[in-house]
Amino acid sequence: MLPSLYIALDAPDKEAALALAKQCQGLPLGFKVGMELFYGEGMPIVRNLQALSDYPVFVDLKLHDIPVTVERAAANLVRQGVRFFNIHAQGGPVMMEAAKNGAIEALPATDSEDSLTILAVTLLTSLSAHDVNQHLQANVSPNDYVAHLAKASQAAGLNGVVCSAKEATVVRDACGEGFLKITPGIRLPENIVGDQQRVMTPEKAIHAGATTLVVGRPITQAANPCVAAQTFCAAVASASCAAPTKAGA
Image (cartoon, rainbow, N blue to C red; front, side, top):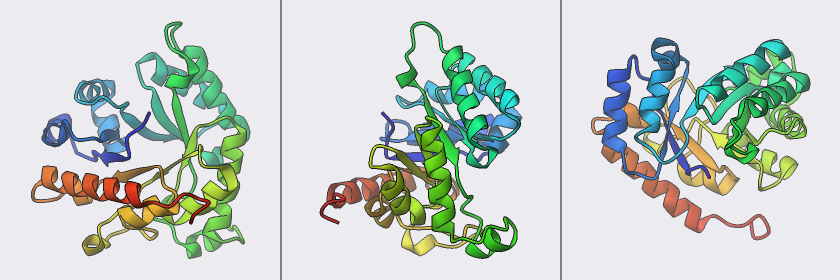
């Protein structure tokens, strides 16, 4: 089971990442390793972070290539101990199915398929409705675009998607409560600034249907990351207790 909060450790090296993680060790959260950190430090940093948390490290590499390449890449991640990673939904249904097949086949006999969490990235939170229409040439709203990719991801057998909290409700409506909705772009009201276009506060994200929130700079670049992480944990816990059920929303 995943926690309700992951910290995006977009640090330049393992020393910085581990220092941040150790400050937050013991809180009810997990750690996410993205491209910057993984490409600099490789699998050792994932193992180092896994030793600090009871939750699986989220390896956020957004695999996106021809199906056979993604299948082999997913298998290699799993063989090295990764149990939570993502791919890009825009790679298509065959690629998504290949990723899952490669991951399952690489599991040791002692693990079950249930130990895997594979997500599909829908639309980056840095992209706006204008980008969807002009750059991606999709004549639909971000909501419709994300819902389409989420349904394709679910049909491919994946566990959930990475989406903006602004699309969490439409993904829930399209794919059901049990389909994971991992949402970056989470900000407290006072720090909704920066390069992300589709952001939301923790309370609104949980109420919209997000299942796990991803927070980076508001924690990692805070004067006291531990205090900032505690603030987000408290906001998530409060919002989770107050969140309406779909029937009562």
